[in-house]
Amino acid sequence: MMDKKQLVAEKIKDRLKELNINRKQFSGMMSVQPSVVTRWLSGTHNFQVFTLFDIERVLNVSLFSYDIPQKENQFIDEFI
Image 1 (cartoon, rainbow, N blue to C red):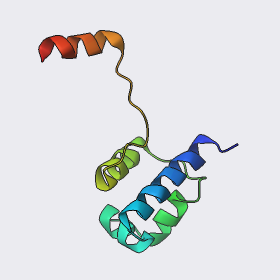
Image 2 (image 1 turned 90 degrees about the horizontal axis):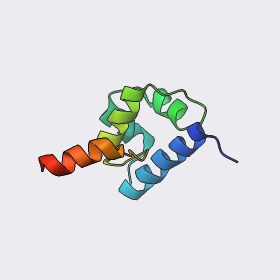
Image 3 (image 1 turned 30 degrees about the vertical axis):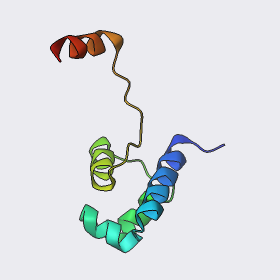
């Protein structure tokens, strides 16, 4: 069974494949060295949350589901 870090890495790999983006291109998009991307995709890297947010933004992908608690959801519905 894969742990959560491996699942995140696989989701990133899948999205890169969908977009036909290689590791070198992705590293440029993220302004990091290619070796950093290799660590990210290893499935063992401990990500910082802001790095994950940046990856989501750059790849236009949701790496996690964000469930809004019912109380906040109700406020949003009333506001809209």
